[in-house]
Image (cartoon, rainbow over all chains, first blue to last red; front, side):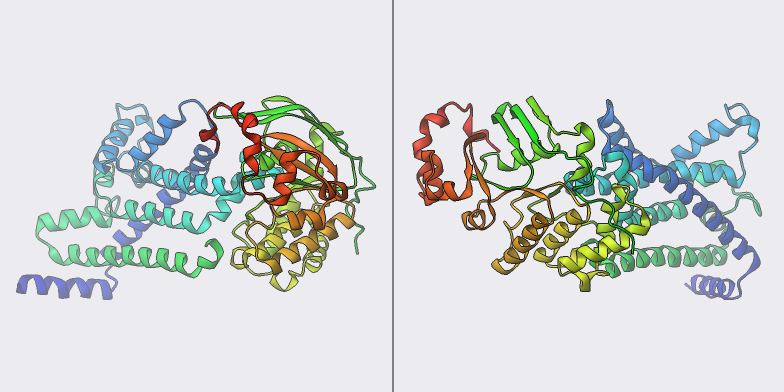
Length: 234
Length: 264
């Protein structure tokens, strides 16, 4: 147990002293996950809204697929992106494998279905309520999209935070396409996996604490947004 | 002050509205049966009838929210007539934003220039007594105030025709009174009113003419005074007298309708 408490103390020391290698890792993690979530939101919000509002052939299939993709195992996504980006793959010429860009691509694939599926649900419910009034005012589904996204903003923020939670917590995809290269593609989750297997618990624990704090603050933020804005979306 | 955007007098008239042989089917049932009529400008028409008679469907067909299965609904300006109409629903649909922003959005959809909107919004809020709520989220207002806001939003569009689908059905008497006053004011400002209600008192208070619908058919249309004095149709008479078993007289009428239990 002393081993554990020593490691814990050392971890706290690393965090409080803003250890250079630790901040580098945290910085890269945030950079990768935030970029991925931003891109995923740009794709997922309009796509989700479009699936919610338009009736077309194969819509049922798309809804089911997007919902199923929400639960895609990160290692599988990692493998697919690996195959696409590897030298022999279709996008091999870009030489993106084992770069932060490859990690962002993988996380975009992981997060977009989450944002799209949740957006579809939110927008579909809003449209049921708004449709007649909107049509009466002269807005069909197409023109109503911006208004619906805006009116669903508080719920959609939680959808985006859910996406960020998934991106920052997953290890499988970034490990495979990033390769956990020190100073290049090492992020919090991959280095925790590495340090634990090496037996260096201090850094792993320190990163674990930061990751936990991050996810706790995301959830607290989501709750506060929901709560403090209740009167707008009741 | 900017000049008013447009007055009903200065824009081309969309009335009269003509319905010709309009039928509407849903789920294999004919819910609206062969309605032909004409709405001229000016009056307040109140459509009455029992629940499920097709009053709301009738309004939606006129307003263009539903397409008739058969027959035609013709406005004078064709498809551009839509922008000179507005509709207020039984349950007010408020966007998740402020009172002001709710009206602003409607004006934006009708392409009213931004510089004109503030004046219009201020005027209709004043006219509907909602000015002190201008910056509040619309959805925290009471249902009665939300319905007034729905009327203010409709009024801001300066429609030539305003449809109202049981606008006071979920309101208490005080709120009902407020809403009726606003409807009257909108009419006084030159808007044609076509509304449904199941409140006969309201029909007496507001109607210039009455249309009685039962089972998807118009059974009587008459000036309000004459209608309430003596109904020509015996179903209408039973309805107005509040005879609970009034529909027994319609037994033959009922038999023509396939699978009545599946009616909504």
